[in-house]
Length: 297
Image 1 (cartoon, helix red, strand yellow):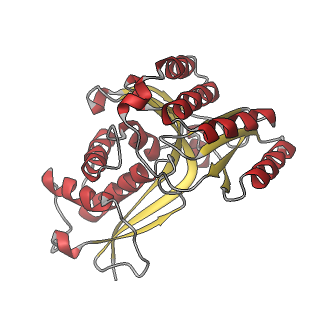
Image 2 (image 1 turned 90 degrees about the vertical axis):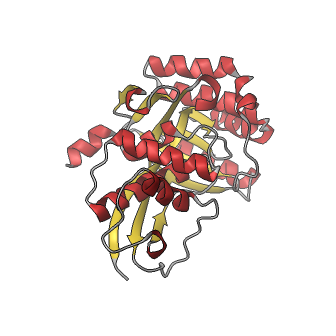
Image 3 (image 1 turned 120 degrees about the vertical axis):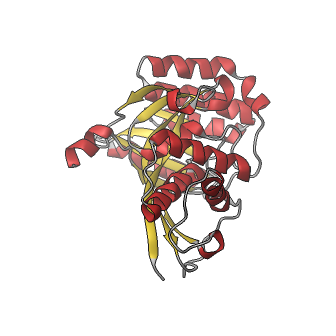
């Protein structure tokens, strides 16, 4: 089995859900994913239940881009290694699309601009039915560290309104509380009714306060989803001295942010959720910042 091409990306969490105002923002998380394009089926079972990778390859072909020399569509296979929980609102589909496109580029010596990767990712996600909006802002967030504010209604190449370096991993710990896979997809109308909270999140982003935006976005999201448990869990995190908290994407994952130096607060939060929500899984991770990436290079 030969690896024809390999691509990487990462997960992210929401600062502003795009369904409410037409503006979306996400901040990169240290949840890596690697996608390999193979000449034979992977020995590991690749679960593509929504057909995202199938739609991605079709979008690649439909736009006239080449396949690896000597291969037809049916000859190509995928291998995926991901740390991003699926169907949790942590941008797993967008990240797989970005990594898959980078694998295709590596396999064919194609050079795609960032906006072209985002456009193909959006086509694949809409075609497979995993996104309400094409997740344009999600794809931007999964490509590089930091956070961006994106106008999802503008031409993709012109849609990035703010491009910020992000938050340093030395300063913040991110706790993800996973409540099982998303069971139903909300509608755009569900989010439209919560404009006030999402407008507060947008205002916070314009002031470069992403943690304030995360909290306001979370409030709007749990109201839109009628997620009573999610609202209670977010409130519990503030009672236990978290700095920010909110449900990400269309749920159900809760993202909690704690200052890195306050390890006792993090442990208290873990104990709190373990005792009250024993079926929930918790993952400790961090933000990805451009400044740290530049320093490492």
